[in-house]
Image 1: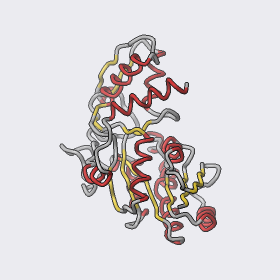
Image 2: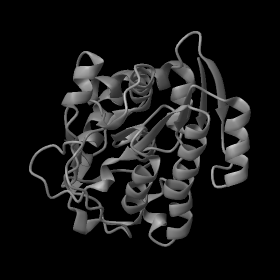
Image 3: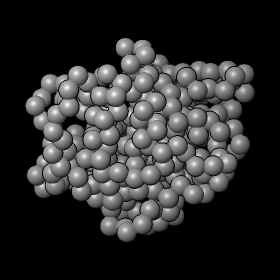
Length: 285
């Protein structure tokens, strides 16, 4: 089997590369290796490589910046998805695309099913929803949320830095979702793709949390591992106390039951995977 991963320089892309099953011939392309906005380059690359699977881990993920940069966000999150899907279809390749909980408005009172009505609140969610539609019915589309990894820019690494630098940290407590460890997501994507699964699916770690809950857990686990020297107060605040250009869903827990059934069981709880990630930081520096 041959697989191409685009967006291989990001935290999910790196995790897909690291978790590739043995025997897979892998072509990993970061932004310099393939500009997914370039229709000719995309077509030529996929025609040359002729993979069995094409993973799209490229995305415009700067949620707040997207509000003032809508065209750039749409180029990467929507138009390029269509280019990649068309190129994959032309050579008979399976296409795997990753989307987001931000396609929902947060008004639900229970976890969102894959077929739940969508209503994104901002440009990021809107363009990711457009990308889902352009991926096509034959694609494997997996929505996820709150992704983090030992490398790259993410909430866990930001909290570790702030907790080491500041006398206190203030964290939003009225937005509820689920943290997702990028290596766990990558492994799930490989399994689903290799089994020929298609259509819309949801995957995150198990459980739910607010950003405040997540921050408290980060500090507790980091202190236990010696990654932080001292505890600092973690102050819960409301969304209205931390205004941002983009509106975020207040509740974006995804229903993963059908995905977990296919995978043969639920993902580990998010706190278990958080502990794994912090231990990797400690072990590897």
